Length: 98
Image 1 (cartoon, rainbow, N blue to C red):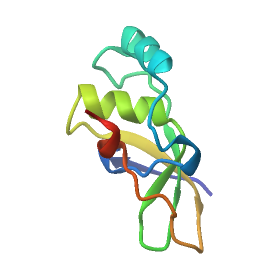
Image 2: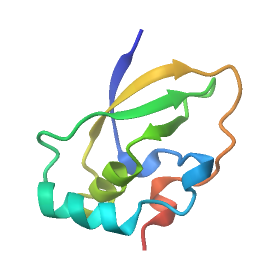
Image 3: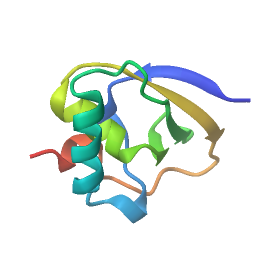
Image 4: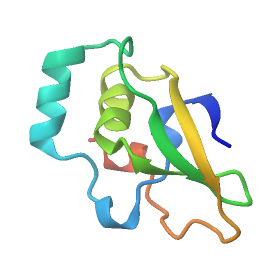
């Protein structure tokens, strides 16, 4: 069963296939659409490891936009699975923001 949390997107871990962060084109499109608001933005899908760390499954660009343009703002994430293994990624959204 899914669980919803409000978290700082800068603390979310990136999936191993997106360690470079958000796609620049998609990021610009989201900035144009949402500006500095989280209203109407879909939840970010994440998995949780045994230590409570959250890794993004879907929503790297959304997390990056909020972390960069609205520092300290919380976003709603949906925990869709609790893993039995630790998250392999060591790169967070904050690590990819200049």
